[in-house]
Image 1: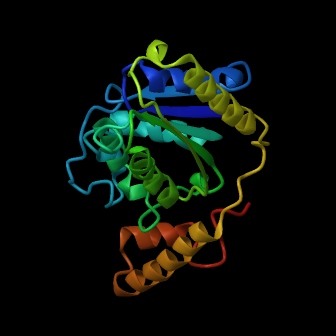
Image 2: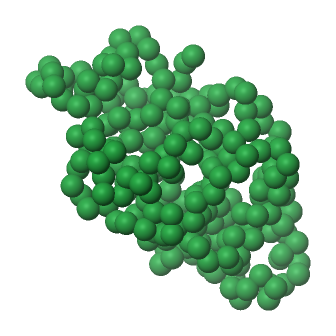
Image 3: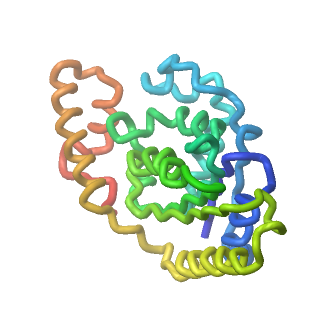
Length: 239
């Protein structure tokens, strides 16, 4: 089993502790690859659209982005972590996700993403957890992932773990361990079921690509969908 973890910050605080707690039961059962942002993907998307035109290897940050993509495509489980920053995911997480705009379903989604499983882990002092989760989930769902779970905590206290009341720490620990146990019991030899929402997005985009292809047969995304057989009877969640 392979797990790829995208850490939205290099800071080893409470979010880091929660992530380590979740991964603990996997450490002797899985190959875990981790990326820390912004260290492992420091550049902002320049909006040059090179990736959208089919030359993602020519991106100015390709030497950072492509290893992350390779690890995600090979993984059975994706884990994304980010503390809440001003009611949203960290800027470093957003910057990394921007680099994968070309992998959204209206463009060139990777067939490997359909059937994957993902966990989003976040914590905050008070509010902002739901919007932080949405920042990350938007990309995951449009990549084709249906099985996306989230784990969030409102600390309502000090930002240091040891200063959180013992009763609350015990409750948080139990919730993380419960979630880890659930993910540990999954049979990763089988793909996750692709839900109706994801399939609906696929079929809407399929109609869009068919129309774009009629107007411009050389259109990059159209040819990608055609090459994968998705404009015919092949579906990325099958086989």
